[in-house]
Length: 140
Image (cartoon, rainbow, N blue to C red; front, side):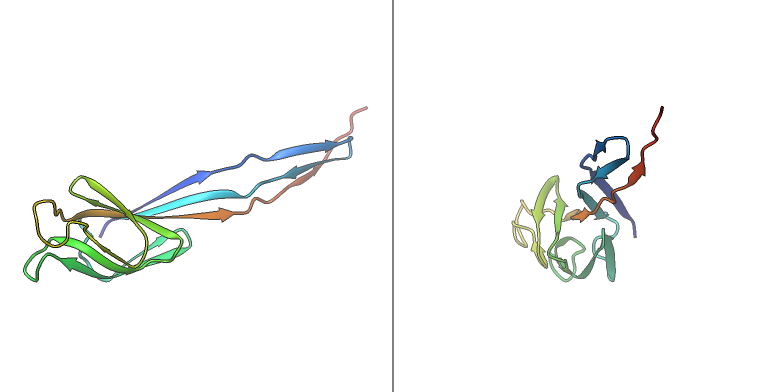
């Protein structure tokens, strides 16, 4: 099984205010951290399958095949926390979703139906920024 993880950090800047020459106080804003984990084509269809998306855990419970003799995966059911979204890659198209179940919009038959090539799960979490206070050095 191959999984990949990606973390994208969106940071807000910190500002500092100088109050005379006694202290420098820094106030930081929380930052949003977007983390993703992917299931590649080799892992699609395998069970059990669990991956971590930031502090959240996604557990795939079942895969939907075109029929009982096929290896073409066209859907899945998983425990997906509410903060997690996913993008299903199938036949050169991307389908964004959220929730516990996904089935290819073309259904189970037809020429527009393409098996799942991979799935990317992402979550954005707020991370607090610790403020630091440093004494100022008075020069005379």
